[in-house]
Length: 499
Ligand code: AMP
Image (cartoon, rainbow, N blue to C red; front, side, top):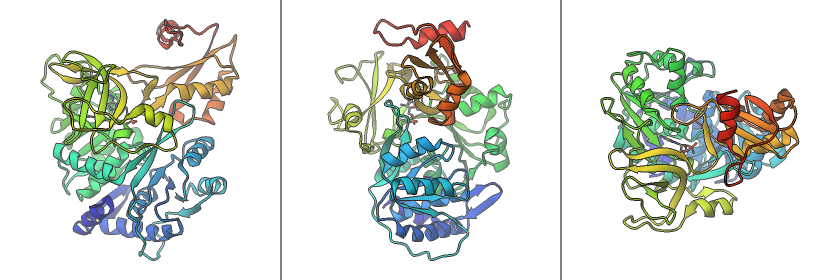
């Protein structure tokens, strides 16, 4: 059954139950799907199967828009309205959209994108009456998610409908969500972990609780006020709550599941969460957008002794594989480390219009002992620990996580270069979190002096807020490592750890 058919079956089975709550408004399954069907009927103005950019954020319209696109068989391309116009335009150019859905606040942006890149701009408008009959196309892709790209422009990952249903089915074997659950929706729609929130929740007939922008600042308070039973966030969220002294023992008594994904989960933080949510199972999920949301999972044993600094990544989902390989693409023996390769029904079709990157990351090959013949190279350096299994050791490239967001340092450096007017720049993640992810970035420019404010302002025109360097420092020279590359670690040690 397609994702649309599965969601519609859940909607009829749970018609009178709450499906979505945001900003004090709650829609039942019948109301949410009626609104989505009205929007889908208007989408008949967009060619069947065409991608549609969705410019909506933390509003009822945003969710109605996603559902309308899934029901009508048009892949959705979430574009964060907070991203600067130049970045929205770069995504629009790469995505090749046939239409644009917007909410009350984003009509101008949608019209600008339609004018610049073609396609019609349509309001989601869930309250407007209208026909509910729409033509559904059998779409190959459910969505296209754009992530930071090494060349300076974001790259789009096309995720099939069957990748998503494979994920939902595999996750159900890890933890069954029921219609009594109340699930959080903290992730931006432009982050693929939001796909888990929406479709795992709605297939189960449970209710999704989405905080408004203001409520997002205090996720613990929001979860408690919502009576949440299922929490899903990046580890940075409880880490921030801990810094604000909002994660004491027993503060989240209503949770039965606390799920984390998107960046390394420090073991000490996981244990603090287990103490804060004494009735919850704590899970560390791992996976890149290219392998659909998450592909391995480990349940925390809060009593375990001698755990590595970050919670292990756990076992691959049913039908999937996660294998640490050496430079020759062969599994490393226990105790060895190497790149983590991923396979199975969640491996996506990969990058749109980017054959070079596609060829480098998606390999049509086999690994002895595994039936799969398509592997995604994650770029994650992982130890095959004889006791703890897969343990994250960092990245093999220049990709970092900033508060859970995936960032290519090369993309930030490209923006810095344009802003500073010199080629000699570096972006350094700082301050670092315990697990190796970071809270922000510092820019370095090789110059006698810099106008840090002007550079930051120029970066803000190109990059989403979390990618903009919080400080810019002028340096005489950029240190190089043994390979002749910029030594970011040396910059960090010299200017940030001991300024
Ligand atoms: P994204 O495509 O934004 O989901 O980012 C995927 C990347 O995030 C992975 O390749 C890892 O580098 C990192 N990541 C995701 N989940 C975890 C985790 N549980 N532990 C360590 N790193 C993770």
